[in-house]
Image (tube, rainbow, N blue to C red; front, side):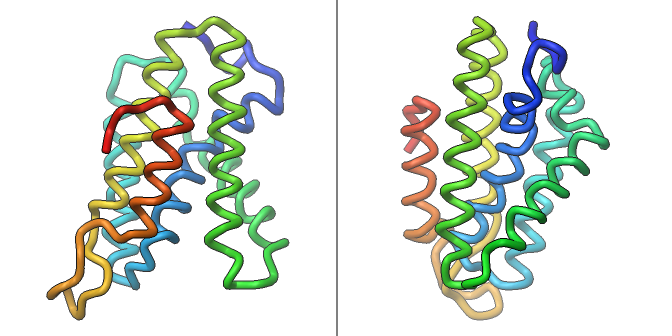
Length: 167
């Protein structure tokens, strides 16, 4: 089992930031509005709670309070540099993809197969939960679709990066 001390600062940053970036990129791809955003935030919170109750020490370390705050600070500073709001979605998706790629490379380099498998499942699970948390395109919860085309495209990209067979 790997721990934070097994990774360089850059590797740990990618491991720590990727789950939140995946959540943000998935949410931004769906444009679900205020109520949908609340549901998506709750989906991430429930995933974090499940992970903290789980059996994977590395994942618990990633979701420790100080690590979550550090990831949020890093992501906020990254997003400050995005001046064009129309580019926000693509910036989030690129940042998420880059972090996922770097994190999985770090886990592979360390030979942490069990941790890598759990991490892949965590990332794809976050993407799926966020995408399914609310409907997009409806009005006050009526109509719309559960997973938008933008979310489907990002999930396909995420699944390709993680090697997941999920649809």
